[in-house]
Image (cartoon, rainbow over all chains, first blue to last red; front, side, top):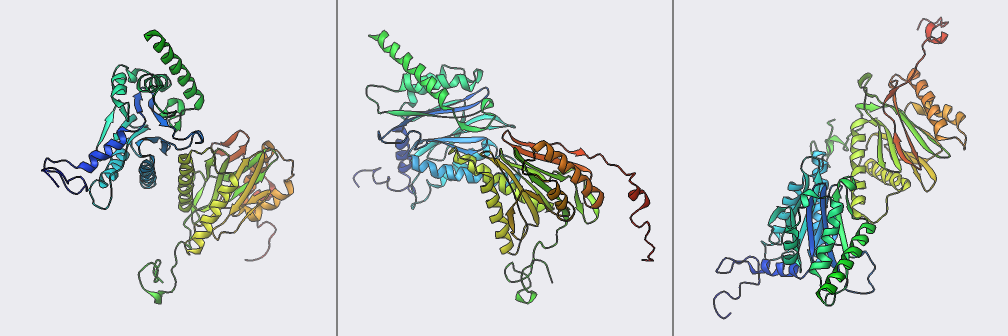
Length: 253
Length: 245
């Protein structure tokens, strides 16, 4: 307890003298260490791609999912602690099902995003819980609203984006995302761009751990149903991105 | 005695006796018929929901697609059927979210429905329906039913409601293990016609659903061709009856 401004980081129930809640800021650190997650809204839907770090060579391919389906028309991806993410997914599914049972229609993206955000926010208010160690990217494609992309952070803040990135490579990824007009291309085209950003720009193959690329989309091509992007498409994009990255390296040498 | 009374649901207290809930259906659908075929399974129903003897809703569907390999059709209280549809849709969405590559098989869906129906009966709050479940999975057809008390079975031919009395004998006579979907559609149409003639709660507007290897195909509503110049119809049922009753 030396000096002013120390000792305020043990609980979310106490502000520091300069108005910060340290526990919430620390949870953002858990997100920053995550594999890169990028998401975009295209003209015909939403796509998200995550660099899933493979922690063990013995891990079964496709396990430890980071992209989850929430309802027929909605899904979310988790950057940060995967286990915390599943609690959010569980809640999101309940909210979506409850809305459907009450109103008989699919939950609008904005409503679900705000409900998830409120839920996440609750965990930054009480001493007996800790904030979520993850941020989620939430996509929805409804008849009324069209494709939408939201990001919910551990503080409970929620914004809608055209494109966004979370995790280790978020700065580089955001710079790259800004260069592309996603609302003029389709999700199928965006798959290659996103793969390229993660594999070609954010990753350093010589240093970074092994990874799997997991992608989720809700678009006209998937009949507006939320699903993992078919592995054939992901693999194709991966090959292209890896080849492009290698030729880049050669150019530099 | 007051409906909803009794000690469980609050109200009048134990003196009112046990809780009584939906034990009188109001808006009801009549028969559903089903035949298991060599290349699929077919069910049929008419499109009427009656309010007592009044033909209140003439164009409603009593057949519902549950999955790409399974349909259900129901007679009995229509609002309860709507509840069943909602329940099943919820279950299927839950399964969709799991995204594990598995889809509930028709027999799993059937069993789930049985659990729901029997569970509600044991809560003394039954869903007042007779539900026919038809599915096609792994090259094999399944056809079963469950009613408001949870009785359930699978069979080659199934009929519910008035069809139990007037349709089932006809179904059994016409059934062959090698009957095809096309033949079964024709057969069900013929039996629906008999039911329309004989059951005052059945309309001539019907719907037929088939489940085959190509998935579920539910027809639009269409009207049966009818013929009213049979001598027996012209003379009337009482012709030759000399009783004074």
